[in-house]
Length: 501
Image (cartoon, rainbow, N blue to C red):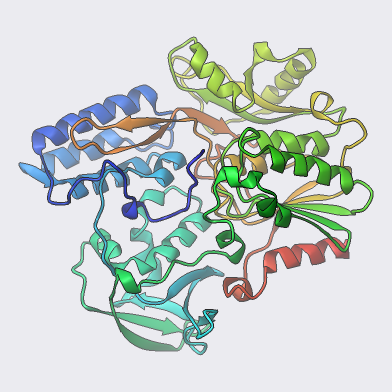
């Protein structure tokens, strides 16, 4: 079973490695851990130095300023902030684990992103979301600090995320006021001053609220469609009651929701349903929507299952190229890891595929030129219609893939792979792209641990997935009704757009 990414705050993670917060590390222990981490990054990290960030300088300054000892949590925060600057999204979002800030104090209310603003919500007596103050719905300042400046400092682990992703994650974290004040290096008062503003940020009101203990905190905001599947395990998508609601045909528009990129081994029933549904809509639908919003990733199995129907039988498309960091030539286990992601070297392709790969590389302009002494040759992700197609079942009608800023990892690969394919449009907002083929790293003294990507994954455009994501062909953002769970506005607008066409 794959552990699902719930986008929970990094500092709330509880693991078997968490140590008591009165633990201290000597300067010698910290120095040894830093040296171990630098060595690991230089030997394994695929994204080290690519964006111009030299982590060696940060480590040098930190060690120079360090006194005889430091708290585990302070060291954990430093490592988290430093690694995030590398731009490795798998490393950042999974986080450095093994420490906790022992948060116990929180802000009241619920905070949600809408149109680049922060709306403050509460629950009514029926547990429905409502705007806290309809006249002044938006959060403008926290204790006199402009909300934009506040947010820029409170999600350091996602500093290299696409801006839409960073904003959403930071807004959800406003609730975690004790953690935020630690990051701001400010003492936490017993009461917090919230400045609320109107729609044009011209008229304000001030609300003074007490901080709440853990028993009174409210859950952070999520999309309604996201929360419905938040705690369902991958293997649970092999149960009919959990997959029945993922498929529908309404007004000749077929719809498939993919909450997770589950593997075929864990959920064969879901794959059977995908195939039976795709066959059933061949004549009864005029368009198809595939919804991967808030899909945290998994495997690429569903990408290649859908390709059987979405890729023309006579076509071959290069949809992803990667280079693997590691010993050269790549050992067998490295190759097997790439093959499990449907990635193959040039020599492993057939004649038609090699011709397509050669043509592709002539015009391919990667954002980074990689050192051939450290990285493998290109491995290609391709969709070969002749090999994939199910006879007579090519879906030649308009297809729309609906994505958002929490579409991550294999789900973001899904979006990127199908962008630019005939009949397919990407809709929504830019994804939180990532594709790293990660390895675990454990620091010997502090016992802090986390993931480091070992593969650089390029999109067809030449950009990497990490930090850039995939931009939509048709941008549709959530509105206030969607934030309040009163409608799924993005989906409704897309349906209306399809009907107009």
